[in-house]
Length: 259
Image (cartoon, rainbow, N blue to C red; front, top):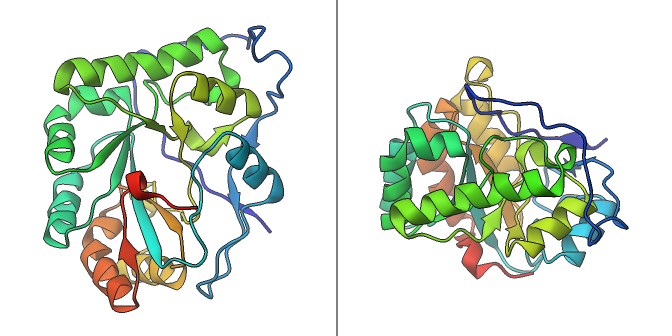
């Protein structure tokens, strides 16, 4: 059974109807069938099954999902729809352990937590694009998709002189059209090979559960997705990193990604 992992939706006061999808001529021939990112876990430290269609499309458009099966590399990523009060601690832990991560932010996050975004940049982390309003990207037309990506791109550049180059589709929902349009905007789509139900702060299962779930699923080339809204993730991150290193894993930036 494939388990789907959905990113937490950010809270916005200006949500608007996205309307019907209208394709431009450049993508009219591409499928806009919505696909939810799925992972079949193994729990034995071997690489999970991402599904043949997922792998086919991600590879076709030079996306990121899972790295070299022969390298004990882990790429930590965080989704940041809104700030729940845990990111400063996460950044402290990453700094103490000399680990670089990628943080995928929304427009709401940039506007409400610019100080933390600046700290991410200053401390050498990657800031990725999670779109302005966290819409499901297959549901919006190409013009709206461009706005959702490039308005955030421009806002971050104007604020901090930082250019984003990685994008994570909200809720893990995408289509071939979306991947193509993302590429046309100069972005590389970054999915993940590990995630768990961690995004709802009211449904945390405890630190031991979080730690065990993360450690049981370590694997070569792992692109680890954690939600920074989880207090459990923040509290176990230090021990997870240290244990993973003790098992011989190295933590790498997405800029060092190897297939």
